[in-house]
Length: 322
Ligand SMILES: [Mn+2]
Image 1: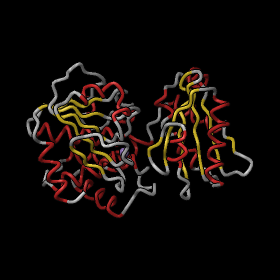
Image 2: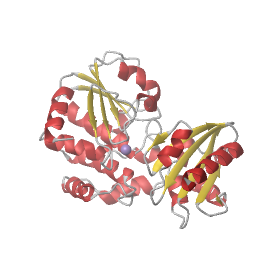
Image 3: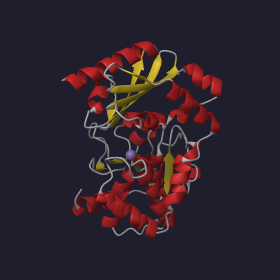
Image 4: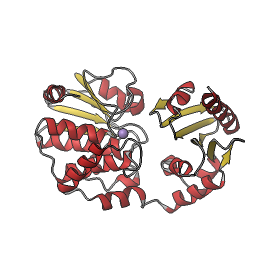
């Protein structure tokens, strides 16, 4: 992403009048904050902009300015430009894919390992911590003024994707950008509280159950937690309540790989993988048709919880041995 690339991409992006910006499924602070910041800038220029998130806005992100404008579906197919935000492929945005693909031109703004070459306009840098960081570089290269609203939206992306600056994707540039956004009016302490310390009670209880379920392999290198469909039903919890639980599994000292298995529906298991010390869980997730980052990936397993645990743990151990 050279300054020239960023200038060229921005002028192509501005060529439209109507826009649809799509967040990925199970949205996080980065996809929402980044999409809303871009929408804010485009609206300021008089553009017609829709932000779509198939799964809506999770409770702990409703504090993001302008998040109330996010819609979860649309029948419109008349957009000039469709943008994938923080989504490494059209599949990750669910039903919004149709509206994006029907746009006269498409764009992809992201920091994931590219999965195909979606987008006539591509602003993708997998070395950056977050799509929010990509956005700041894009705005900066084009002298787009970041106001307090956009600074808050973008800092939310940075804070969520770096685990509040604790993950290995945090660079000195990340801190520079965070300081810059704070100087523009964003409040890190408020964002961190909203993102990390506003868990509903049912989600806290679900976390308790997940931690009680922890198991390891004999060598202690792999640690996993399980959430059953029954756990969700008994607590009245939703899939969104499982979101940050894998980070608590990762916080246990010793294991190199942490996994969360959750029974979304009977025989439909969602799996999150996290690694330490360079184990490439992206490769492991790929075996099961998933992926995303080297140290953080996810996949899906059709079958029982027990089969999912047996097969995925065996695959992890196989990768560690090779
Ligand atoms: Mn992201």
